[in-house]
Image (cartoon, rainbow, N blue to C red; front, side, top):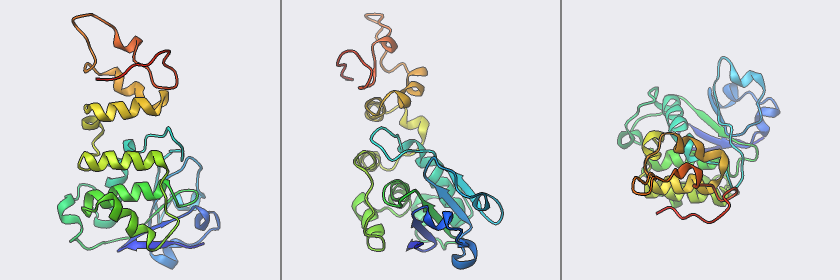
Length: 220
């Protein structure tokens, strides 16, 4: 039932300690928990003295995890600094006021991806360094290929996590479309980037994700 302290008040683990009923508040002083999985955790971790955030994402090749980065980054900032709007460039110099556990089912893919996003933005770590920071205490940390691809894009976009801004960036839209049907509808609803006044084509009728489009369609 191991918890792994990455730095300061930040811990990662599998879901096992919670399912086994470990008193993480008493034993580790942890009062904030992010559960990066669809499965619920014992109710005791969702009420006082805990503050709990559930991120319902699967560990697979079609889940869009970037879409949750703003929410998780703000929650981690609230836990560590008491301020969800902590300025990134000042974060690593600020003292942690509390402790947080970020876990998923196995503690290898989803929760490390969420923590990597935080370390990259608020500690100015590269993706490589963020993963090393976790692997030095938990060697089996390994976000799946889909999450690694998204973290590399996040790094390329200078750790942009605002959903509204992301939805206006073509390379992010391309990613969402490639991930599949469950991810792209919100982008199309208010999108005029792909409009074609010259041909008056209704692109929503031809733009399809890779799993359901009848023919290849490349976004410019």
